[in-house]
Length: 343
Ligand code: KG4
Ligand code: ZN
Image 1: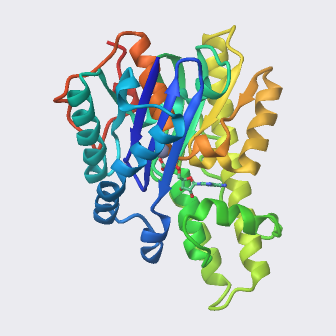
Image 2 (image 1 turned 45 degrees about the vertical axis):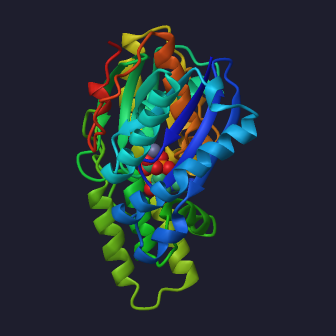
C-alpha cells in the first residue's frame, strides 16, 4: 500500500508519500518560519493563506520525488485537526478533492495521533508503549495501547513545554522558534547560576505545569537589567532548559511506574513532537528509561517536528484496520487524543 499524506495544521505545509513497508518515498516540508518571524509567533491568517498558495505544488513535488502518479496512491491521508482551523481546512479540502476525483479512500488523521504513531514508522515498536508528546501546543503522557486506543495519563494544566521554550527565547531576545535557539544558547551557560522553581515538585500524578517557570524566567531576565550580557543569556537559557528537562523527566517517571505495573511486558518509552529534538531532554529521558529497564525511542528530529510522512503513516495504520472516512468529515480546531477511536 502507498499513501499520500498532507499536513497543514500549523506553520508547515507538507506532503509525503509512504508505503506500508515503512518506506518514506518522499517527504516535502515547506516551513513558513520567515513569514511569521517578524511577529514572533504564528499568525493564523498568514498561515492559512500560505498553505493555500503552496499545498498543490508540494503534492506535485512529493509525487515527482517518489516517481509516482496520483493514480498510484491507495489512499489520501490528511490532518483533520487539531490545529489552526484555516490551515486545517486548506489541507482537508485538498485531500477531499483528490480523494473524490481519484475515487480513492480518504483518511482523516488526528495530528497528535500522527506524532504518537511516528515511532512505528521509524522503529520496530510494538504496542503498548508509553509516549511523552511534547510540541508547541501540547505536553502529554499517553499510554498507547493500539491504533485509536490512547489513554491520556497526564497533560499540562497551563502552558505546553514548547510554548515555554518559545517564551523564554523571546524574553532573552533569541530568535523564533525558541526551542533550538534556547538549546544553542544553553550550551555555553551555567545552569546553577539561577535557581528557578521546579514545577509540581513533590506532587503526585503525571500532569505538567510550565506557566510558573515562565513567570520566574521573566522575573530573572528583568533582574538582569536592560542589557543582559551574552553570558547572562546563556546562563538563563541553561537554567530554564535544565529545569524543564528535569520536570518532564520527573512527571514521566510517575507515569512510567503506573504504566509498567499495568503492562508488565512493555519495554518502550517514546518521546515525540518538536521538543523531542532537545538533546538535554533526550538525555534525561534515556537515563530514566534505563533505570526502569525500558528503551527510549525517539524518531529523528525531522520526523519529530511537523511533517506529512507521519500523517501518511497514521493513515496507513488506520487503513490496515479498515478505518477510512467520509468526504464530509469536519476539520476540527480542537480534537483531544483521548477522543480518537478505532471504530
Ligand atoms: O511538533 P512541533 O514541530 O509543532 C507543533 O505541533 O507544535 O513543535 C514545535 C515546538 C516549538 O515550540 C519549538 O520551539 C519546539 O518544538 N522545539 C524545541 C526544539 N526544537 C523545536 N524545543 C526545545 N529544544 C529544541 N531543540
Ligand atoms: Zn505537531
